[in-house]
Image 1 (cartoon, one colour):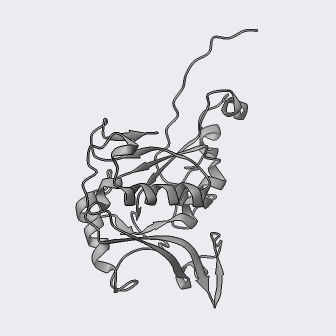
Image 2 (tube, helix red, strand yellow; image 1 turned 60 degrees about the horizontal axis):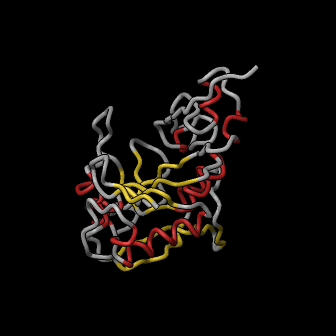
Length: 226
């Protein structure tokens, strides 16, 4: 029987590491926050719906990493964890206005962790990425991206399942020179500074997923679409 077709947007809220099955248990919420939660929460929706023409699974990723509350955070920028870059954590929090929407708690801030992004992409089967808040990095002299972990002298680029290991790992970073130019309100890829484009291009190449939207400000229209 033919049925009328509809365009449906399904939006998730919490990030994957708060997922009760795939997150950093016990520092999680009480439900599935990843793609699996779509099917447990919306009865009758077939997984095959995501294989139809025009369907996408879009991962929304900040240009840096944040977390509210307790739990492992390898790239967190605090005096205890990273004395040299701790001031960048405060700067991200202040410029990015990083407070929890529901609780009002200050979010913990750190460099973008591509190991976590790749893990999230594998679990959620992203087909595209929406990179948000690129403009928050406009005034940074240097910007780092985590591309691997080290534990007991061994380097790896996958997310460990053991929380005790998470507390002991060292981070392997790639460092970028900051673009030191305003991107707020930018709407065209061609208008972004070359170093900002290099930052975005590295992310999509390392994760293996295209970044098709880039947030450049708080307004709905502050968006680069590629």
